[in-house]
Length: 624
Figure 1 (cartoon, helix red, strand yellow):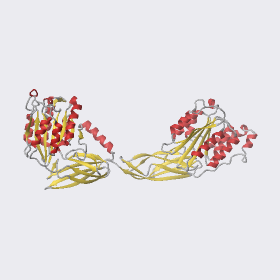
Figure 2 (cartoon, helix red, strand yellow):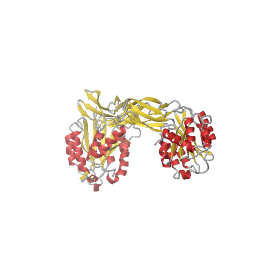
Figure 3 (cartoon, helix red, strand yellow):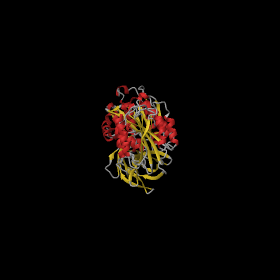
Figure 4 (cartoon, one colour):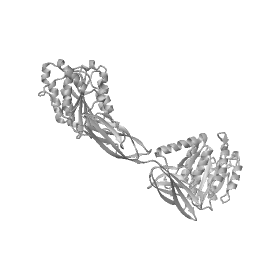
């Protein structure tokens, strides 16, 4: 607790007659004593926060920090810790509470405060152990290195500190000396040093440990004369609290309020104050009210505008002639199914072939009618022991009435043979021969080429014809790393997606991603997000202006603007050959894009496993 100066003075007055001899009394008469320096003008200034803040969660709590002082400027604080290192401290402070207290003072000063600290040790002489520095660790290290030997020369310590403040103290700073001792010193020399402090505008805060009345009178005189304060501590274990409660800049307390709220006390250490206030989106009027030791009051006011920077979401959907669509134009997708022997492998007690057949059978129903579908398989006709590397067959060609034949053909698939991926890709080129518009091949496989073909070269040839290959690695198992690398290379060559799926849910999600028309979201010339028509996953984006580029034929470009917390659905509609767009907006709860994305991933992991996808072309702008 901070010891009341009034109480100290009463104690001193009561003890004065018996404790001070006539010579000492004469030395303290006004003509010989220091002339007390009147209090300076109280100043207070808020240094942070800045006048513009961003919030991604509505209300925010923010630390308000600043400086209050009656001894100079409030832009900076320069403090010299002048500590007694005399031999007597070995008995008066055997546990070295002095050092712990000074370190606590340093650590208690707000990191946002532009405060420099220097350290001087004095006994019979003095030494600058640490010049003024903003490095708190360096100041702490200097304190820890202080020794205890020699006599007590207050004047030497004060003069060394004044020299450092004169040399390295900053303009418009509050300059203070924190002087600690456990004994008495030469009064004349100490008073002369205090007069120099007066002349330099430096306040000396004095602290006495022990019961030396003569020392107490001298220290109280020095502090009063320089505009500082005096604290007397008899129990060394009380030093840490005493140091923390020093009012080094003449300020008793500071309160903080926002928008007329009930003021709260700020934490005040060495003139630096901090406190946490709740801020709202919009304008916030923050008031710091300082009260000095002589009961002056002064306030500092700043207006802080908190902007809502919450995340927004974007979904892009399409209607073709009034019906939900995966494309705005004719889109042909051939699904190539791996029916090799390895598809007998199981996932959760069910063979991969059975799972794939169930999902593909359902897909023929839920995929939009505007999608022109064909079905090819490989490895379904010959046993693996036959090593038939031409085992690939177009089971259902493209056509408007392909859905029922596809479901029937899927039902008849049996996993038998090899994995001739390159051969199947080459054959698929003929399947697209009479198809115009958007064209893509979706290959569902649980393994890599087994017939020595070059599927990467086959994919490049298909790409030359404007056909993109998307690969879904389904249940890759223990060979996932090797197979992933091989399948990724095929997708790279084609400019398509490579996705992995390890469950029925993931396989269905992968089909959704690979069968729709792709789009990208641009901010200037930068791709910031990618998506597929028909996908139910929203894109999380910060507020701003964007351009949605749809990879349709012809391409469609739509400018959009997202505000904070927008929930925007961009609807593209083709009617009688004409494409138009409309926007439907809702409002989200305030949240950051990082938090929203993390929440979505966690939900997918717990409820419906997410699909891993990679855009494979080296140039993202040409990959589409």
